[in-house]
Amino acid sequence: PAYLERRDSHRMNESEAKKQIENMVRFIEQEAREKAEEILDQTELELETWKNEFKTTKRAEWKAHYESEKKRREVAGKIAESKLKYSEDERLMKERQDIMLSLKREAREKLSATIKSKKSEYTKLLEDLLVEGMLKLMEPRITVRCVKGDQSIVRGLLGKAKSRFTEEMQKTCTEYKSKFNMNTDIALDATPLSDSCIGGVWVMSAAYTSRPDAIIVRNSLDARLETCVENITPVIRALMFPEDEQRAKEIADSREKALAAMAAEHH
Image (cartoon, rainbow, N blue to C red; front, side):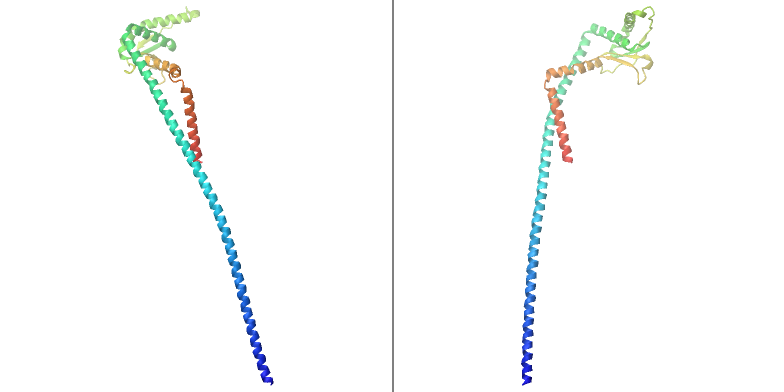
């Protein structure tokens, strides 16, 4: 009958529709699985790429840190080495300086003892120092200063020193001998030299004695000894410390290296 045929046809349509739905579901699920696998693969690839980049970056950072630390330690080592060597050189230089000062003190003590034991020679030396100072100063009014213990001796030498000064000037100025008539006044200053002074004299222009810019010929034995020491020090050093010149160069080089190392560390 037609009714039964329609009913069977309806059941077939339902069956086919169900199959189509199932096929669609399977297709969607397959698409989802494939998409999920694609996402997972892409994620794993990106993770691996990130890991590689992270390793490369960190490796570069570690290498840079290592190089920096290595350089810092090398610089610190050079600074420490230079400081140690410089300190040793400074110690040696100080010891030698102390020796030179000791020699100077010994010379001063011997000079002081000599002028005390040889009064006549010292008196003649004072006269010579007076005349020399007057000739250097060439002033019409002169003041002389000496240590307190020598004031009586120097006072007694003023007249003789003045005469010698005049004679020396006349010998020097032979062309104007008949015209030379420099009447020099010379007097002993009431203020003595320091008690620490060995001896000798200061010869000063009387017009400027109290001024800070006074012209003074310092002919004290202390000043003469100082000049002598300055002139002879290179000779003494060469005899006592022949390696000094080389050591001085080494010290300068060591100082330069230390400064260069510190500058490098700063940068």
